Image (cartoon, rainbow, N blue to C red; front, side, top):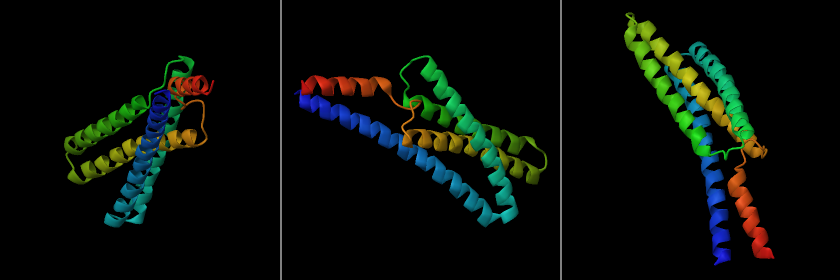
Amino acid sequence: MASEEKQEKAKALFESRFMSIILMLTLVVMGALFIVIIWILFSQEIALNVLMYIGIGAGSGAILTIFSLFIFLKLEKNFDRNILFLFTMGVLAISLILSLILKYSVSDPTQGNWLFIYTSSVGLGITTGIAISYLLLAMFKSKLVENRKIEKDFEENTNENEE
């Protein structure tokens, strides 16, 4: 019975980390595809502008991720990866809403379209920055991203079962 619990907890820990990494890799791929599609549809110059806005967003996304992880670490609360995913989804939703507002609030349709693309680029950049910073921290097993409570319980149960 204890062995089955240990296997279930190990499986849950692996699945949680695996899904986190897969979702973050998906965001990075989505950002790269956005740049490629802009390059194909428009031109290299416009794709470089979009890349610049994605870079600005990525830097701010990385800063937001590290600050939020430091806050969770200092509060000594159990960091739940779902909070970071909800934050990422919120950024994407707000970015889409702002993009649509800017597109339809500007009287010039061409300028509205470019505002839509650039605002979407910044939002996608923020989420890509969150994804890249989280992936790097997870790959190097930083103390900022480890789930202390689950891992501590798993280690305690492993030690109890060995004795």
